[in-house]
Amino acid sequence: MKNIAGAPGTVTGLILRVIQCCFAAGSIVAMSTSRHFYYVTAFCYLIASMSLQVIWSSTLASLDAYSIAQKKIIHNHFVVSFFVVGDWVIATLSLAAAASSAGITVLYFSDLGDCGLNADCAKFELAVALAFMSWITIAISSLIMFWILAAN
Amino acid sequence: MKNIAGAPGTVTGLILRVIQCCFAAGSIVAMSTSRHFYYVTAFCYLIASMSLQVIWSSTLASLDAYSIAQKKIIHNHFVVSFFVVGDWVIATLSLAAAASSAGITVLYFSDLGDCGLNADCAKFELAVALAFMSWITIAISSLIMFWILAAN
Image 1 (cartoon, rainbow over the protein chains, first blue to last red):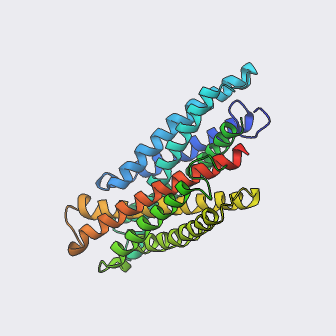
Image 2 (cartoon, rainbow over the protein chains, first blue to last red; image 1 turned 90 degrees about the horizontal axis):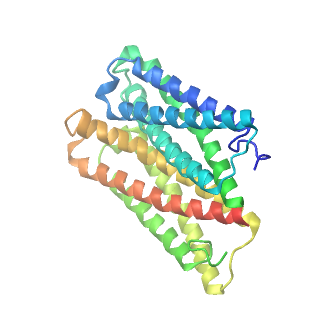
Image 3 (cartoon, rainbow over the protein chains, first blue to last red; image 1 turned 60 degrees about the vertical axis):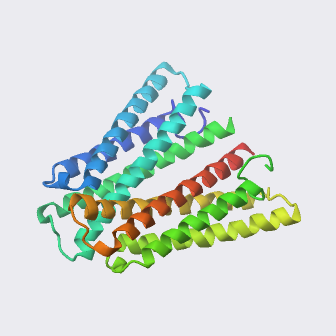
């Protein structure tokens, strides 16, 4: 399990988790510093979903760091199963949050032809872009975890 | 491979594909019979994504039916890999389409407190609900396919 890049307890796994945290935290900051975001359910859901991702990824990053420091590999089948389920749930929620916010951003800034909540245009776009990037990184983790579980 | 429910060339696999087709086709009909859907990019994207799912699922349903009729199991590694990639791409597109349309539906019918495109409220909600159900069924197929590929 140690040889697969991105597996729990490896340096690549730790890097992936840290990147996920950074993107998700960036998305939260961009969205929550905009005015009026709380009027739109999808934007609130984006913040909730990204917060969940920060908690999940930072917990797993800490576990990875501890494993690397202790030179112990996490290969307990039950623990990996738990990581797989958690990763898939978080990845699905992240994609749904990013897509629903993207739908509304496109509606306001392209379909309706104006920037309804104008000062915050760039912040909404940035939050959505960061949410999609955080989804891509957690999707990679999820695939690696599922592969490890299925192949063992 | 034959013993895993939902594997290509099995009756459960065929049933899953047919259900995917029905939900996706229902979503297309509900959305395309509404007026004004073409003003919203996310609604057009929903139709495009569901159309892709109908084409993909009906093709695989035909292959499953052929396999069952011929009593031949599809266990070519290259073919299964192709199914896995296809399933994941379609599942991701379906979830993104359903979520973006759901975000706009919630915005119009809940956040803004009125039903802006009023006669079509129920049709939009139905299209989104069917799209989510079609995503759930293709997600099940994707997980089964990925499991088969990883476990062989």
